[in-house]
Image (tube, rainbow, N blue to C red; front, top):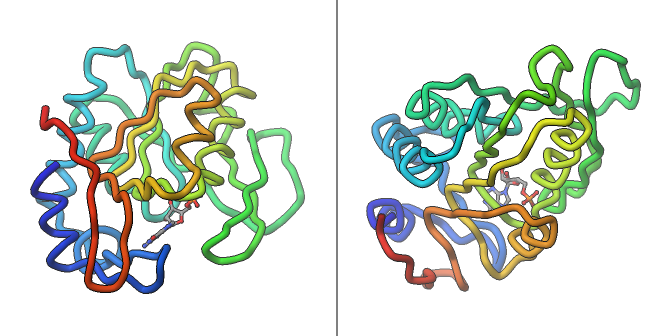
Length: 194
Ligand code: 5GP
């Protein structure tokens, strides 16, 4: 998505070899017009599939899951993060290790909102190590729902997330794929526009 790549070039800050800060327009202050466009792009990519729910993880996937849900005409659910290890019967839950924050947490979704009748599209802001999305895949498997695919706004292709998801047979689409980056320099993988 060219407009997204341009914004990343203009406003993205590369904090280290692996962390890209885009909080002026994507995941702290949010450019709402761009977020809606991103939702429409995901709907164009996955719209031929019978999606019944969009799933993401709080907090920074929410605006894109909502935009995709609006464009597809379906609800979205965000998995909640909690440190508590207490498990309730009422939720599906999975452990996640965050490499960016070096902490362990659990994500959970109420059993009321996901079940074997659902066909799910996962949407998130970043695909990096894939740890959070693999946790979401485990929750979807536990619920008996079918996972149709994963859509990410930015993929850091030099990290292992895509590989982990593809190993599980999950189709992955990213709107901007970063091949490599270093302060002042960013290289995208060329993608055909829809
Ligand atoms: P994972 O490593 O599980 O793929 O990424 C988990 C979450 O960490 C992402 O959804 C995103 O919110 C955050 N994250 C990972 N890499 C980056 C990055 O380079 N920049 C920012 N702003 N967030 C990131």
